[in-house]
Length: 89
Image 1: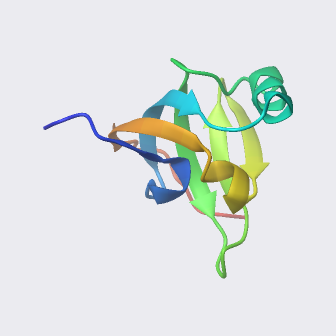
Image 2: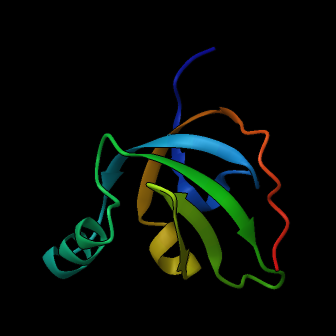
């Protein structure tokens, strides 16, 4: 399978990926870097809310919620599905 770069918002719940790039201004890139989201980092899309609500991801055993606008600016290379329970609470 070919490695395709897609926005984080296009991952399915439970799917793992590696961050490829962040497209945004310096402030956004610095903020995401401080949260541990930077190129080369493995993340898991944990769950998402209905009606274009926030997307919850896991980075280094920490769960973070991101708005869809920010998730659209984070580009990832999808891996596969995790066996974790990805039910939103």
